[in-house]
Amino acid sequence: MKKWLKITLTISIIVLVVSGALVVFVIIPVVGKNTMLYPSRDSVEMAYTPNELDMTYANVTIPTSDGLDLKGWYIEPLDLNDPNSNVTLIVLHGATHSKSFMLNHYGEGFYNQGYRMLFFDSRNRGESPDTELGLTWGIDEVKDIRAAVDFVKDQPEVNDSQVVIFAESQGAATLLFYAEKYSDVSAIIADSSWAYGDQMIEKAYPMRSGFPWIIFGQITIAMMERHYGFTFADISPAADAGNITMPTYIIHGNADLDISPEDATTIYNALTSASNRTLWRVDDRGHVKAYLESDYFTRIAQFITNNI
Image (cartoon, rainbow, N blue to C red; front, top):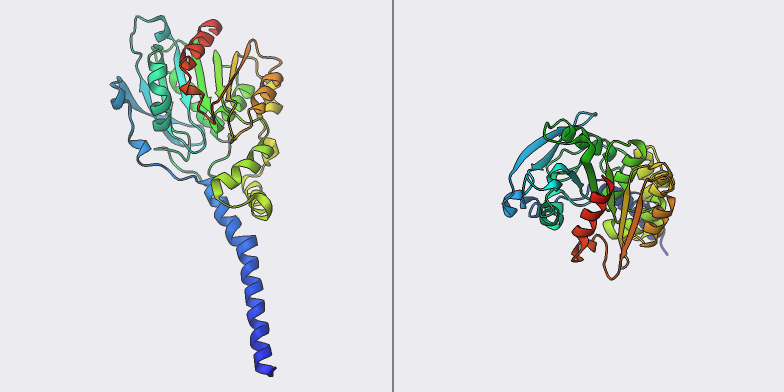
């Protein structure tokens, strides 16, 4: 083989190896990281408002302790003569959802129970602003619940002793982190939370990024943990649940393929200090699909009535 051909072949192999290494160890992990930090917004979903359900409401801005202005809907009760109108229900979405998604799936069910309600977009979702850190899986989002609770308690018509929070998926994990830190609401309902963050992210990464966990996931998560300054093992509701004292309702679909239904039992068993704890594992329902059960909202209403 001629010398120039050998040189050309060697250079080509080096270029291919370096390019492949860049793709495997840099480009794909960076793309995966950005996908996980900043899930896309659904503009069609965001068009669903309380107008669709003929609700009386106000568009509100909720300031957080770190300077964000979250966007929400403050919804009047269906009937002010209903005893349930004294209850204010704060509703929080999951990692890839928004207040519009929650209104579409849960709004009518809760509205018909008679509650005053606040639906709001957490940071990096819906109409609320983005942050440099992006989605933090509950760490910074706790500040958003703190702001929402402060907002409703500032309203003159709200009974401070009858504030309840409902959340699903990542929002449910955030809610459990909040309840471990604060004891200023009457009860919480957590639908489809994970128990341990490191187990959750191993399943979530390939589903959300489209890349396999082996090699790509491990590199990406290492990048994300450096970005955050905490590890996914640090965001484990089951590890914090023992400090929650308020009544807590844990709900999970037994057909959930995103988060193991056993996580609900793990969290429930860890709620050793809760004044009341209830677990409902719903047969034949997938991730955040328990609301399709005909008695979903009446069960929650009964839990609230029994615990406030």
